[in-house]
Image 1: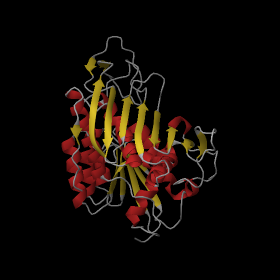
Image 2 (image 1 turned 135 degrees about the vertical axis):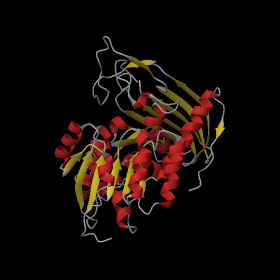
Image 3 (image 1 turned 180 degrees about the horizontal axis):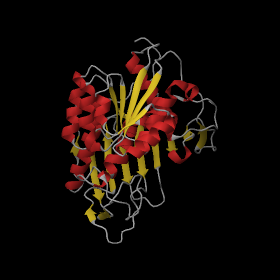
Image 4 (image 1 turned 180 degrees about the vertical axis):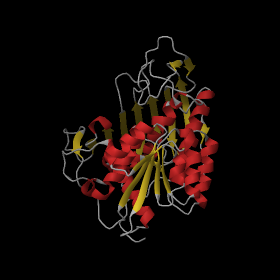
Length: 400
């Protein structure tokens, strides 16, 4: 591909995650090495026009549209980020693939296993790059822990513990939305648990079975909004219609990895006063490592290198020896820290490398639709376990 020819990008969805994608595409040319095609910020699409216009102006996109089909029909748009409700992913992605566009779709891949499988099958025949957005793969600290595991620094891994706790659903006056409908397993597990599952496999390798699945719905009904709301806006519930919540506010399970390690997983969207709390611990025969999203610029490590009598977890700041960080930050030294937002920019850069056909010195490729389908198969197995009193469920690999 001619690096002098710009590529046009559109983002479908102008909510919180959509604007984060919009920002990532705006920033993608500022990190790592020059030489990739320049990005033309073409369009933001959102059914709610004020959001589309606001995002387009705020992030420097040329136009705002209210129908995603306008993006599919525009032959001058090359790359599309899909950041809308899960039930819309399949229709939009398939249309974009037919139109010859490269597609980066937010997780989870779809709302149903049937749609996710169809998207994974469409990927096989696509002549374009397709990916699902598991951005924590791009977190420098998580990538460093994965490297410690891969290189044997922590010895044989015995246990992984991961928690992703959020509070966006803790207020019962938060209105009914697509996140609160669907089968058990499509709630907290499908939303934040998808990130947790992919992160666990990034660090510890593939899961082969799950057991001990348990789920509950804390808030049984939510008010129905009469106007447009976003980001969990609470409503005055005086004289409003209520709708049933049909999926999980809390999901927990145990996982068994191919390596022999065991993992425990906990996912909540009703964790009081914990807006975005992802935490993990990895314990091996020669050491342990921990990470907390609230302190994203560091990991805690304890290993056999400590002098006798001076063992204990020590703080290691994210620094240029960690993956992604050295050329991904304009101030790349320990103590600067990072946020979850940088992960989207690093993901966009890797996606752009794939589109441009760069292989030498490239970042690891983005997660595929097949990876997204696999994660949903795991979530479905957890739901099956929960429906059967925690029974063990073996995982069937998906043939890519």
